[in-house]
Length: 94
Image (cartoon, rainbow, N blue to C red; front, side):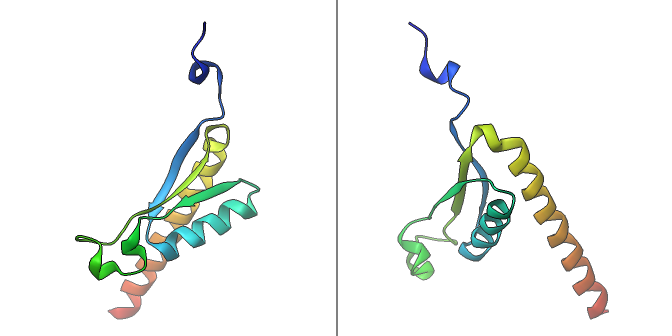
């Protein structure tokens, strides 16, 4: 008998983790790329971060492993745009 995970290329996989607003933004970008996803919220600390036991809660975007390559491109573009924005803000500050 074969193991179901060996034959199934449609396993859930985390593609991004961040704060609630970052996750909402990236999930929107994934939806625009026609990639289905769901969010695993970081727990009670999401509603009350001061009571999360230290640090901000991590929210995670979960996708199908079949969409991983396409989703990785979307996430990489998000990080590239974020770096550009940070560079522009630093240039404006000087």
